[in-house]
Length: 118
Length: 115
Image 1 (spheres, each protein chain N blue to C red):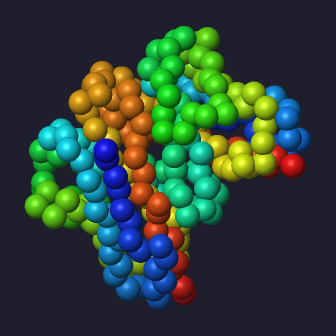
Image 2: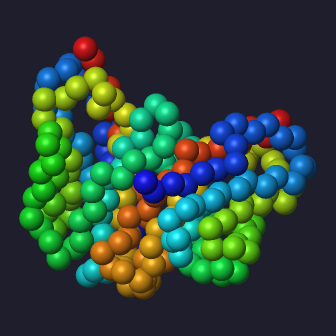
């Protein structure tokens, strides 16, 4: 069965610090997708990134970067020079593609509550 | 812009009532999903649908049913609401069949309180 673990329940840092959110996953499938979502205080989940299991290249988008390592089954998310607007709950999620066509739910981690203090 | 809407942001119902939560998406997506979100438990999948009139159980379907009569609309039904169904309910949709399009788009959520 698939599983996603976000061991950090809550992280608090001061603005402009770098912060890394950890995500460890378990799956028996060889083809799968990993995601990060952001849930700001308004409540709506916002899609940040998707990574498939065959693409281990790290990705950078502005102040956000993601480090995917199949060897350790991890997909960590780093925010550089954090800002107060980054305060939110961040979820890592996993989808196994062998169910076909994307018609399957995501398995979410329990989320990490990130607090950026001014 | 991608849009998923849910009929209510907040809902208060009494134990034993039948409750309908509605979700509509305007992206012509084939897949639709219902999750519930609880503190310390993250998001858990209740039901999903990959086509009109099709439905599949997720991880926690007990106490719920769903209806998908039109492609754009996916309803979650609590046949007899109970206090342990007090939660935040999130609807999502995604494309089907394209391996590069697995991301799900979420609605704003409905916070349901059962008293």
